[in-house]
Amino acid sequence: MLIKWIACQVREGQQQFFSRGQEQWRAVREVDGFLGQASGWNVSDPAEAVILACWRDEAAYRAFMANHHDPVFAKTRQQQTYERIRVELYERVLDMPGTMENVLDALAVGKWLRLEQRPVLPEADCLAGWPGAAAGVAGKAVKDGGRFLIATVWDAAQPDREGTSGAIIAPLEDAWLVLP
Image (cartoon, rainbow, N blue to C red; front, side):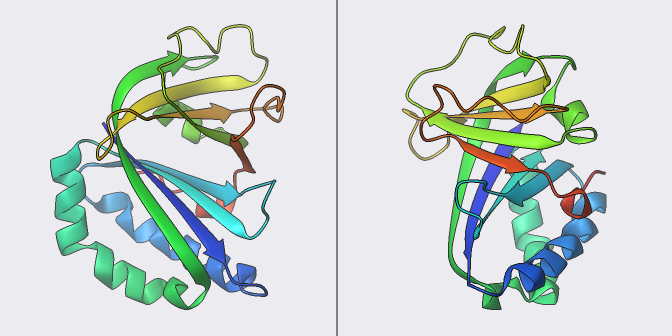
């Protein structure tokens, strides 16, 4: 599975327009290889939208970028709403079950998203015993294999912030959820 992490620094006063545009990404639900996408606003930086998208593999993602991305992006008119965008790709290396088996199932019920970059992989059972932790996935950076993204979805309680310096926590926006 290929994991795409997008962070958009949205211009002041443009959050509502960005949000409307984000809803337009539902058009990708029919694209071959698309597995799901969840997004929200970073609680530490309310002007930053974070998006987690999952693809079957890099070939499916590349086909989407070549054949579908630009028309959908043009329709969203989001380019006018943000100052900066950061896009990073990760190859799944570890599933982290919680109350659910995998992160794709968790997207459908998730209330919170937690994203963190680390130089090392966590243990596979690291979510065990954490109330509200639905599931997670760890991915190795495609460009810089020395970094890992730890993405966890929480179905109830807000993720604990203790010991999470640098982690991004975002309540998921229901209107932005895209499932195949």
